[in-house]
Image 1 (cartoon, rainbow, N blue to C red):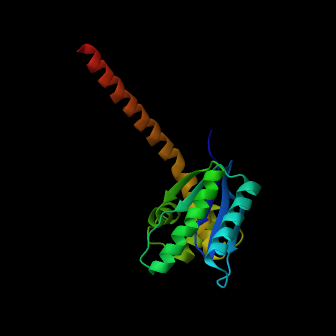
Image 2: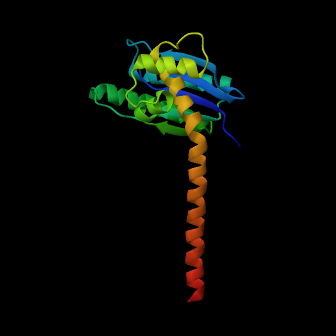
Image 3: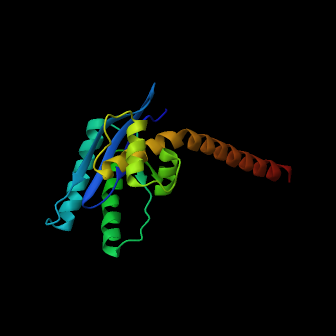
Length: 186
């Protein structure tokens, strides 16, 4: 089955952007998008719980077929990294509980796929997402635009990834058959 509805997520403890993007007859379009914001004065575990519950609501309401997340890459503070990793963990848990396959894309690949440049800045990415999804205005805040970009990246990358997987599976079966043939000749 072709997977056309993607939930893109830009995870963060303070702000998690999400966007549901779907392929249609005239190209990709935005189904829905939003921001999950957790208050800094709440205990850490409550913030994780809120993010988890909100992602569950998004999945239940919009019924994506797959999910796409930005691959982790940090040069920031260790605490920020730790919180983002744990937030990402509850998001991936929600995906697993809903039987959604999760794909990861490095930021440079998302930028290259959407804008043609792996070094595109936030404003360029927001504009390219706007143009790709044929929106009247750019998506704001940038966490939401990033989530949409990740979903678009998956929609554009998935057909090639599927073909590569088919070829890899075929080559693996071929190698296995060859080994069986060699054993049978002995």
